[in-house]
Amino acid sequence: PDRHARGKPLPTIPGRVPSAREPIVGCAFAGRCPKARRVCGSKRPAFTAVGRSRVSCHIYDPQSGWLADGEATEFAAMQ
Image (cartoon, rainbow, N blue to C red):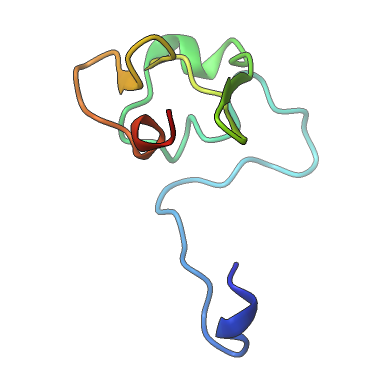
């Protein structure tokens, strides 16, 4: 959230939100991510340092800053 945007609606992520009553298995965004793979629903991805940020995604390639399917990510610009 942007502290200068007080009172404005927060952006949403389409899809299914995980239950707060059950532990999350796999990636918390698997039910909402259009790039999710089978592994995303069963195994939690490890964190990778990218500049001053961290990425936690099965399809992110830290060597190139690209997704496994060849699409650039916003994190590629941070490297």
